Length: 204
Length: 204
Image 1: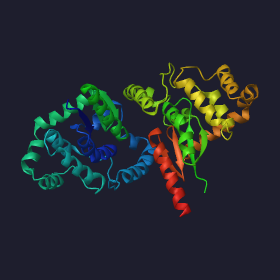
Image 2: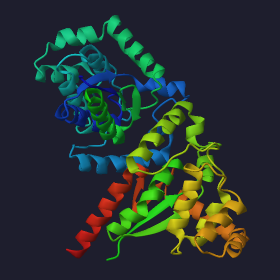
Image 3: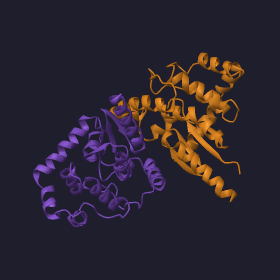
Image 4: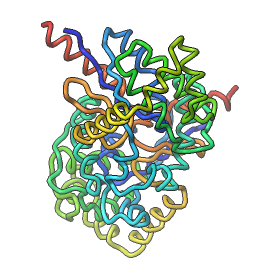
């Protein structure tokens, strides 16, 4: 039985960055498929009455988070530079990820955009940067950027975000394995471990 | 150099429970001293404008937390029963912990009270239950319960809570190692690892 892990993420989310850099290798090494599920955190936060990230709204938690990110990036061996804009607007890359979510390039695309935001402090919500990423990946940048801005893609991202709400998602990253929800980069290993257990049980 | 880890906790906090059950063995096994720092979460939450736990205020996050606790307790091998009152009032045990924070019985006392709350679903804010715990530990229950209710102890717990605010604490459990703050049971291993590294560096 081909077990999978769903990865719900957003480019503006720093803890999603940590998972995005790790999930494909971890899953692949364990024979699991990753289902990439880009969604917008903004509308979820708005539904709680929050106009922005809780890391901005709660100053102390925010101050701690920036310290934590330095240590977590060191722990996982991923590069880090605190973004000068947080949370970073990421509508165009989110729409591109929506378009590519089932394509073989989605992992590499997601990591490249995450690195631009969290290791290079670049504006990712721009056709120029996205063109650069898509070209690097050998993709047809003009066609994809056009399709990303089409009404049908915008609607797909909105409905993916509504689906996130419907699943009880309240933050990112969030993982699902066998119908169970796992919240936060700190639970990635647990989610993968549970997927492996479920697979063992099903082949017993 | 005798390195130490500060453990800031509260009996009403479920993630503090996970750390309370683990920290003494982990620290001892690594030659680290634990500094027990009971403090009240209520006033901290009030300073954010919250009248109760965020797990109550945010329904989805709360629903997830109860699922997460089942899995985390299984992972760490600690017993679990969802408390029928949450967050549980714990003023008397918090004051007893304040009295005992530098005594050799603080670890055993903390774990016993945590188990009553999170594995036995008992009312811990009562002289009867506290008498039971203190007697089990071979301590003078009447004397300690009397001292716990003295104005000087109440004031000590209040000033410990103000100290928590002053240190930038926004939740529990929180650890400090060499002046660095670590939030959440998920960071206990990181905090201990960093304490060991600091000790190695200082003896090099």
